[in-house]
Image 1 (cartoon, rainbow, N blue to C red):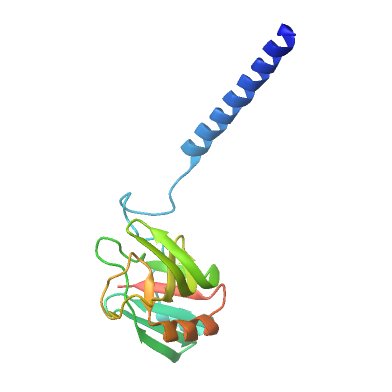
Image 2 (cartoon, rainbow, N blue to C red):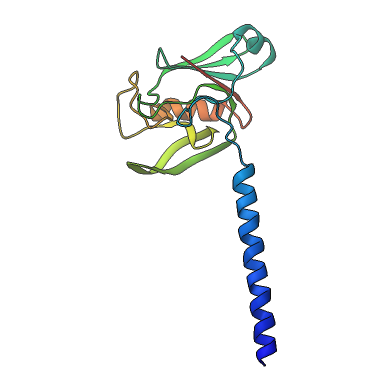
Amino acid sequence: MQTWIRSGGIRSSRTFCTGVALMVVTLLSWSSPLTGTPNSTTATATPVNDNNIRQSQPRWIEIDLSEQRLRGWEGNKLVYSYRISGGKRSTPTPIGRFRINSKYRTNRMRGRGYNIPDVPYTMYFYRGYAIHGAYWHNRFGTPVSHGCVNLPVKQAGNLYRWASTGTLVVVHK
């Protein structure tokens, strides 16, 4: 009986050590996709050349943070132009070229200092950053978000129906 207990203990300790070793290797081999300082929210991006995008992308979204404006394009044709609320200075919207990777009609959004249920027309484009409707404020044109791109609900719905997963999102200042 004691031999069985000892061999089981040895097997358990080997499994535990293997698990710890795998976690250490994983942590040491991970590298951040961000460039710049560790707290940077600027994603790796190529320079924005609107002419190339307009010629190669049937539908794409431009987010101009200096103007606090989102534009929906079909090639060279402007389809939508909406005032937005991008991220505050302390929680900026990431800059770069992204693609919409998931869409949710409604979604709960949580983070440090906020927990908002039923966020309408959510389209994630980078990590936890999304374009979505905001029913809790009416300060569009002013950076007030935690990094997401806020739109009035009706306009967010129009954009949600127009854009598909994979649509290019270009965010710049």
